Image 1 (cartoon, helix red, strand yellow):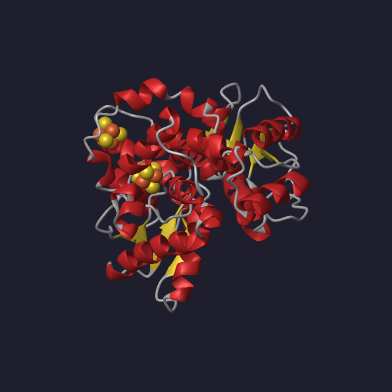
Image 2: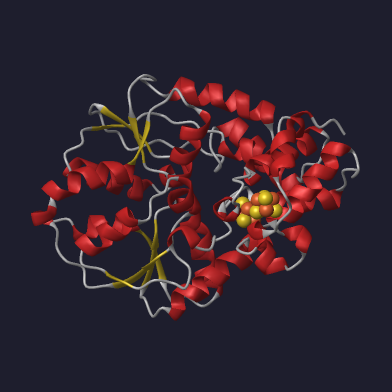
Length: 355
Ligand code: SF4
Ligand code: SF4
């Protein structure tokens, strides 16, 4: 197999001293339990592919696609090895060598044909203000919620402007389809009305991804906008007497270093916050990232169930989070576990408290 993408990470792979600090918190290792399932195991496979000591196989592909890109390993690695980037490079080489599952291909074909993961036309609510707002397909599909989040911004004084959107391309990148990603990037740029102007991004995954892959674009996370504007709105918030626990999405806490802000908002709206055993930068992943929902849905489901069980144990009535993919995965797990806790986006809670 040609390893043109992994080759770019040769130096980084040599920095790794195989110390294994990175696998302690790896959710996939914790669930599956074998060395090969942890971050270090995946790096050793990648190194084997790079040197030719390992031949690619279905099994190797399965192991490299069993990663949610949660970034817990990066937090623990003192050498700062870019583990998810290396895994992504290995996936790209495997993808080009034909190691693609039907479920992965189906998702990528869907986005290519319809511009989103739902294979249908997703029209945003029509707002004609000045500030561009990107909702992202998971929120666009929840039409009422999209409108609610735009109204939330309007209440805070943002004159929002919506536009027809196309996927930011994240699924192509995480599943290793380099060519598909490049095509989707062009489509994404085309849809953005003013490429030079800053835009607010309501989706956690999109904003983190756009900042990393479109350095010329100015994506502002909706929570940053809210945090700036909320002090002027404080007198118009009613206290919600609810007990909640907050699930830190990986891209928010570890990816964007945002741990306190969501908790501050919860305090401002009068929610009693009870933490799960792991939270903040140590928060366990729900399993919804890295393409795991199509690469190994059973594993994604198991990780979400674990997280929901931890949330139920806190005694909270609501498990709140910010990422729509976390919401989706956690909601499925709640249903499976008999609906003992409600899943709500933190933006919904904030909106509920607005008078
Ligand atoms: S990636 Fe970092 S923590 Fe993991 S084995 Fe290598 S050096 Fe150690
Ligand atoms: S990104 Fe998360 S799931 Fe992937 S190897 Fe690192 S700790 Fe494990």
